[in-house]
Image (cartoon, rainbow over all chains, first blue to last red; front, side, top):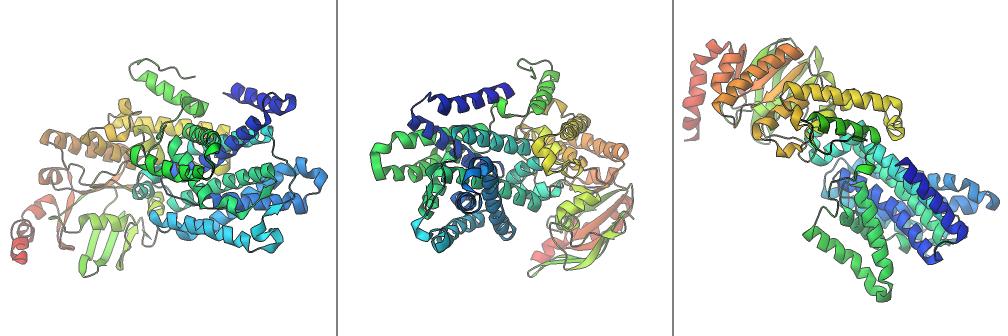
Length: 324
Length: 257
């Protein structure tokens, strides 16, 4: 696995360096990467934790604007490429703080209420941005250098997957799964459920914020309408298409949906109907998505894979027990 | 006394669900809590474990009050329970059901978890080994990687006990562990409960409808009816108490007519 990750990095570096593929395909690859980050992070809350948050684009917007203001107004132009990761982390942190402000009051309520609260948050973020003239208000914000490159997107996708994977396969992350299964029972076997929920929510928002920052420095022009409820719906579709509670599902969902959306460009405005329609169909036909709570072995930490392999081998030497 | 409940009251609107209940559980004891359906037994468990907050009265565990604490804080103090209607983490493996219950004993924080440090690997290995040892006690080790929902009913009840014990409780609350079991299984369960008490040094408070089992393994029994304690004593005392017989055989019918 580490070798594959390195090979991927080499490829991500070589593609723009030697112009190995058409720039349009390179752009699509970057969109896929950003969408993987958005999907993995939303899946943590909606899939692994079993809540229903619907305003992920709100966090993306906070990250996009914070990171853009940092690179345009604060960081000297020449330093941009070097300090870009810091600007992105700033964007993620901004989104994380907003998540904290929302999480504390809303996680005292259950289920449907979180959907309403996050939907409202998405709308509030959008109208707050529209009403701040200093960042362009409804006209949008521009002036960013094109700092988002394929290697950067790749690195951030790996960081996102790595952090969220390590979180899920550890003690704090098992608490997240327990909440999905039975919140009352989780609390009664010692899981501090409020703490777990707030942490997962912040982690999810952080990576949505970083993805927003990458998005902003790829387009070089952001607009409040980039982050409306349609965008949130698209992220939801990618989660439920790929599969809830699965990292591999998020990767698949984001990739398939992004390519589909690009391939259907000829449909023009009708393309926008696709996401809501797909969401409705998925909810009816296959609510757990392609992977549905399953995980690809390669995305399970090596030590955990080894432990499970040993347990499988122990059980009367059944086949396929190799633990690499 | 390990657990001491004094003048406990809880009302749900017009229903006085728990009325001036006093209950004492000595360290190392095996105490039964019985009564007709709707007597308030599970409500008492919910009050002890912090699922409900009492209107008045006190619950003292090892000399300190549990009132006002969150359920997870009460678990940290050393109280664990099982549920009358099984509440396992159904889609997770048998192993993970038990590993989750180590939440407060993992002893590593969020940042080491992200970095998956040597300490995390070490602790995860220990938690897994400890979970497997617990599963072995309940004959569930071979099913460790199966999803909990796939287990037969009796095994699910045992898994709930294993999960509760993983929190290292001093007091174990068992809510109708024999429900739905056949007489042979009930016999094995009675033995298992006594074994658990000796092996883990845990005190047991047991809600049960299977009179034979309660009478045979409990040292003391408290009888609830309509949220009130109507009798307390040894199995022999309780068996011969006229108020208990009335509660089980007659008064409910009379009251409802």
